[in-house]
Amino acid sequence: MDPDHGLDESPSSVIDMLARLESEERVAKFIAFTGDLNKAMDLEIYDGLGRCAATFWEYVLIMRDYCIEKTDGNFSGNLFGYLTSEQTLGRKCDPKRFAQTESESVKSNSGLLHG
Image (cartoon, rainbow, N blue to C red; front, side):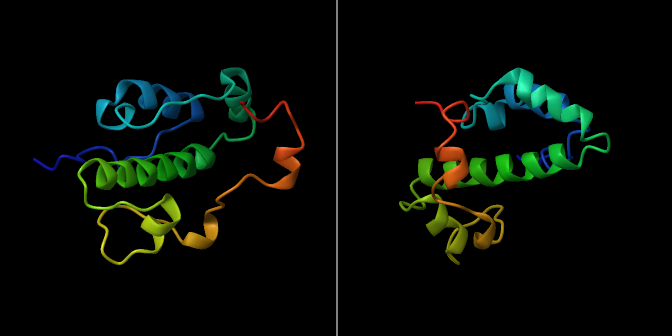
C-alpha cells in the first residue's frame, strides 16, 4: 500500500484541514498548527468552496515531504533549497511562491507574529 494513500485528498474546509493536521499521524509527526484557532476558523466565512483549505493542505504536504527528506538524511539544506533541488523527492511548489521571511506588513504587526 502507498504510504501516502489518502493524503492528497483535499480537505473540504479549513476546520477539516486543522482536524487532519492533528489526527493524521503521517503529517502531525512533522507539522503542528501554532496560529490563532479563532482566526483560522474565521476563514470559513470566505472559503465556502474549500479552496483555501486545499491550498493550505498542499503547502502542509510540501513541508511534510521536506521534513521527511531532512529526517531520512536525504537532504541537508533549507526549504528553498529543497524546492529548487532536482535531487529531492516529494511534493514541491514553484519556488516563486515561497518567501524566506515574512513581509514587512506582517513583521510590523505584532499581533501576527509569535515570538
